[in-house]
Image (cartoon, rainbow, N blue to C red; front, side, top):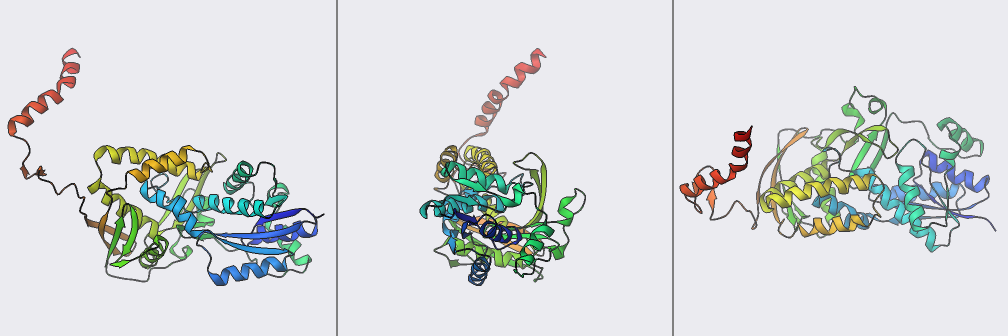
Length: 394
C-alpha cells in the first residue's frame, strides 16, 4: 500500500514541489490541506485546490480555522497587549502554530502515515511545524523534502516544468504572508541592518488625506464595535479596523528579533488593525485597571508573546497565563477615541463606566477630597524613612 501523507499546502513554490515530488518520486498518496487563518479568500482557496490536484494530490481540503485562531490566540494577544520587542504583533508566528494544529488533527482523522511541510532549514516555521506534529502525534513520520534535500528555487522550478506543470513562479522582490492579524513583508532591505522597506513594498498604499475619527468599542477586553457599528464576531471587527487603518498607511514597521534557531532576524510588517486595536485596548486598561494589574499584565504579556513565537503554545503554562489575562479583563469595557492621519494616529481618550479617574477621591493636580494636608506630610515622612536611614549611614 502507498504511504498516506498529509501535506501542509499553501500553493507556493515549495509546497507545490513537495506535492509533486512526494507523489511521483516517493510514490505517496498525497492529501493536501490548506489551514486558512483568514489570509485566503474563497477564490484563492479554489485556485489552490485546483493547483493541488494538478500536482498529483488525491484530495485537497481547506481547513477554515480563523475563528479558532481568534478564540485561542488573538484575543489573548489583545488581553496581553502583545507586541514582540515592543514592535511586532506576532502575526505570522502565531498563525503557524494553529495551522500546524489543524494539519495534524486532519492527518490523525484520516489515518495518515506521515505529515509533510515545505519549510526550509533557515527559518522558524520548520520548528513550529515539527514540534507541534511531534507532540500531538509522536509516532507519525514528518517529511520535509525542501529542507532535507537543500533545494534551490531554480531546482524546484525546473523539476515542476520538466514534469509538465506550468505556473508563474517568477520570484517576487518580496515575500508576503497575509493573515487576519497582519501581513509580513520580507526580502531585499530586510536582509540587511541598515535599510528599511520602501512604501511600494507594502501591500496597501496611502489612500487618504487630512484626518479621520475612529472609535473602537470593547466589552471585557474584546473588540465589539467600530465607529458605532456593533460586531457579533470580533474577526469581522478586526477586518474593518484593518481596512480603515491601512488607507492611512498606519501599522507599518520593521521588526528585529531573535529567532528560535538562534540567529537574528528582520522582517517588515503591515498591521493597521492589530496596532490600532492593541494600543486602544492598552489605553482603556490604563483607565480601568490598577497599577499592579497593569504591571503584572506587562510581564505575562511579554512571556506569552515570546512563548507563542517560539512554538511553545502547547506548554501547559500558556493556559495558566491565559486564565490570568482573561481574569484582568472583567472591567475593560468602554469606547476609545482615535484620530487617524497619514502614517500615524493619536489616542484621544476613552469613555467607560469603570474609569478609575471618575472617583470621589480627588482630581489630580487640582483638588484632594479623601485626605488632608497633614495626612500627606505624615505619609511622606514615613515613605522617606528607608532612604533617610541609608543616607545617614552613608
